[in-house]
Each structure stands twice: as C-alpha cells, then as structure tokens.
Image (tube, rainbow, N blue to C red; front, side, top):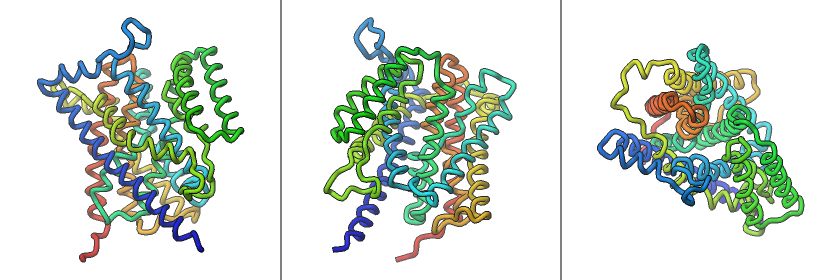
Length: 404
C-alpha cells in the first residue's frame, strides 16, 4: 500500500490546523489590544492599572512581582519555547530543511530586519537612549499578520501563507539572537554556569534517546530560574529548552501514528494555549496606551516615527527588494500563485510587528517609562497602518474567488 497520499493528506491537515490557529489567535490578539486601549482610555483605567500591577508571589519574597512581570518574563518564556519548537521542526523537517525552501524566506527575513533598523537609526542616531530601541521595528507578528490575511479567505494562495509564516519564523530566530546579544544585562557568571550545566544535562538526555517530556520540562523550569538570575533575559530559557526537545522523525513533518515526536506533541499541545491565552494576555497587559495627552508632535517625534517608518516602509522595501533580486538572479522563484503585487502585499503585512516589537521595546526601555510609552505608540501606529495597507492592497491585487 502506498502511504504517500496518506502522508500528504496529514500534511495538508497539519498546515490547515496551523493556519487556523494562527489566524484565529491573530484576531483574538487584535481584540485584546483594542480592549487594552479602551480600558486605558476610559473610567476603567484604574482597574486596568491595578490588574497590570497586581502582586503575585509569597509576601515579602524576592519573587513577588507584578502580574505584568509574570506575563512578560514568565508566560512569554512559554511563547519562546513554542517559537523554538517551530524553528527546530522547520529546520529538521519543514520549510527550512532544504536549501531551495530556505533561501528565499531567509534572505527576505534578513533584509526585512536590516532595512527597518536602518530607517530607525537614520531618525534616532543622535539620541543614545532612543537608540536602544533600534531592533523594535525588525520584528513580524505571524499571528497578527495571518489573522489579517484570513480576512481575504480563499483568495490567498497556500504558497503565500507558507512564505509569510516561514519569513516570520526566520524573523523570530533573528529576533532571538538580537535579544541574546544586545539586550542582556550585567552577567552573573555562577548562575550562567549553572544554566549551561542544565542545558548540558538536557543534551545528555537527548543523546540517551530519552523521549519522555517530563525530564526536559523540569530541567527547563530550573533553567528559567538560573537564566533569570544570570542577567540574560529569562525568556531565552524557553528557547534553549525548545531546542533541546527531541524530534524523532526528521524526514517527515507529520507523525505516522507509530512513533510520535516529543517535539511535535509538545508543539501541538502548547499552540492553542499560546495563540488563545498567552499572546492575547500579553497584548492586553502591554498595549494599554493612554492617548488623552498625546499630540501630533508626539506621533512625529523620532522614536515612534523611526519605529513606524521602519515597519510600514522599511519592512516591505527590504523584503520585496530581496525577493525581486533573488528571482532576477535565478536563485529563487516566487511561490505558485504569487506575482510582484502579491509579494508587495506580503511585505506590507510583515510590517505588523506587534507582539515581538512590544516585547523588544519592554527590554530596551525597561528603565525609561517615557521612551517605552513612545515605543508602544510607534508599534501600535505602525501595526494598524501596515495591516490596513496590506489588507487593502491585497484586496486589489489578489484574484477574486470563482463564483460557484
């Protein structure tokens, strides 16, 4: 019996489930951000701020922190764990596993990081404090972008969804490296050595072919505490843990029901929680910007303007130019169903930074509340504009579905 049709059917089902989760989660993410803005600009503002600063943890203990901290440093570690699982699976058995599949999204992602950063630097190079936010406009929010793309329904070719998601995965990988290198505080070497020992223990478990998830996740919890104490941002413990989870079937991205991959099982288990709970909660806790005191001059100041221009203009310019050059030189081709117009629209949607941009902003300006507020303004402004422009452009250039 030929198993190929069954494998292809499961692959299509897995892709459909992935896009359904991401798109629905993206729409929920938008709703959470809108609710945060409503709460922050209404008589409910005091209740909203009380929610964000609700202390959690044993009274008087060093780990008693505001709810916002637990979301940004705790729950977001789970988000980064999922990102690492997706990156590892894609690298071993998915869209990043072959040179032909990898080259276009990877080059587009690199250009889509570099060009927005240049836009930001051009506007803020004279302000050393603002320059800490240079990486804010380099991110793409896959859930938000796919949520907007879902509004176009069947007009969107599958190749476009795959390219967008793969660029976003590569983008996340670059963002992780940026956070690790540029947003690390003073290092505490004993804690860092302990973290390295825990990662080594996970690696040994992998070499011993341990398939049960419990040992990896318990060590991951210990790793989170040690990384938190080391000066490296605690969410990177989620990245390291995800990369250590074993993926048994490297040739097939979909399980064949005979031997499940621990990585895929955990990814599938976490995905709904991250899409429907963690990311919306992060958006609600971080997007509540009070707009009452804002003036036009605030929108045009270098920090939010650099973020907005980087995302709205820099992202599509970098991605589209990279894609066109790759096609012109014969190194890669556009996915089936995509022309230059669709590629421009995809570049516009990649300008929706949101979750990762807000997160990088919280790292860059954790001790500068005014600059953080300006960065949130820039991210929200850019994400809305990029979403509206991308949706409007793609409505014009994508063919309408055939009438039944």
